[in-house]
Image 1 (cartoon, helix red, strand yellow):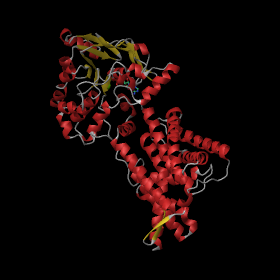
Image 2: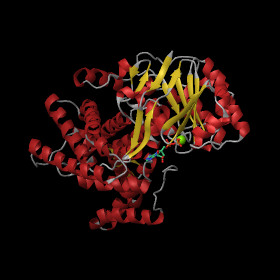
Image 3: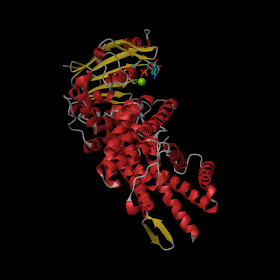
Image 4: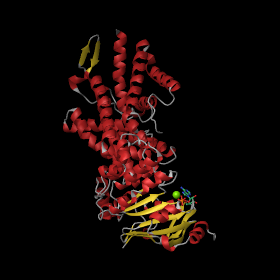
Length: 287
Length: 264
Ligand SMILES: Nc1ncnc2c1ncn2[C@@H]1O[C@H](COP(=O)(O)OP(=O)(O)O)[C@@H](O)[C@H]1O
Ligand SMILES: [Mg+2]
């Protein structure tokens, strides 16, 4: 019975990793940009929510709603002014620039908020839980998982049911031909990055409420997100969720065997999946 | 009336010069054919007109406005639309989505254009809204009329574009371009690699396209086909126009010389 509980907790943890990873997956899927600053952008989102909560005295969920359009604008301008210039046949420039961006964000947050660790308070919700049979699930982890599903369903709806989603896919296929259809690829990419940062805001809400954070936690969180994206299959959002769940379950199972094995078990699961399916679980047909 | 003209048009790929002062003209309602051997510069000319390759503003004029420096999306929103060489359907999109995307950005009044239009007052950059003002993208072509033109596409509308035969893909590429009701349609080698009967079907659409008010430039290596459909013909060789005339006014020998650079 303890095993069921362990696995359920792992699945729920996978939801958090999938949320961290969804924005990364989205951006990579559309513009082949590996954003090394994604974790730091999530942390920045968490500080933004914290500020809104403490200045306006809002509930964290409402604060995230306030933060989301701000984050969208930051993503839009960042892509338009900086990252679009790095895109091309060479994959090195975006890596270097987003790595630099990561350092800049960390140091700006350090300057603005000090190295003290922070937490966004959810009040009683933090400890609330529901029991389903033998398994007790925290309400917050459950909400996180539900949000991950909602984000992925929402993004897929945007991708496959809207005009902007059509423009995303066409531009990802072939930006030159897309421009002949009246599309400005750099605007499409800017919109995609804005959307990715809206997703990052949702990830930030749970990052900031479920654990302490400081300006430096971004890269460590990013590792799991990367692993989730890669074993899920690059560019596949449901694959990203599956990848997140695999790593989450591996971590809780590893920790149940020996608490020191938690992190290691996640990385080992990542390597095993890659050995068996080098292109990930759900590789895209066109690549 | 002159609709579109190039004047001393040059184009480069890096250090390589592909066009050396090309002058062509398209009048309203005309069909113009551009012929020439592989590598003559026909596709480069199309890419220059549509803004994929950009150069001096003055080298290309549309309705009297210099457009040589404009981005492809702005040129498209002025009503100059290309069926690119090799069809270039979007593999991630179904047939219907390929058609829809051809019409969804016409008109040039989306938010990004408005922002750029506002910013252009301060930066002096081209104003996309003003530049697209003469063309609203409405006309006879809609999803339904494109399906009437090429009924097979309606049957296959939920297939990925790339799952179709070459001829059907070419129909999607033409339909996609028509969806914005272009004033000028540029067709780059639409018959390349297709069987004669398929080519005939595709060219059968041309009169209907013209009836919708679209002027057409076709790039063709098939000289017979070009002479049959065109009001005027240009022949290109090594980045230059070597012959211009009405199909009935030019002889086989003229064409042979213009095409290969040596008398027959
Ligand atoms: N992307 C490119 N880079 C470098 N040279 C090119 C490129 N595209 C075409 N060229 C060269 O430009 C010349 C004209 O090519 P193109 O316009 O494609 O001719 P056509 O369409 O008449 O066959 C050729 O010599 C070709 O090799
Ligand atoms: Mg060509």
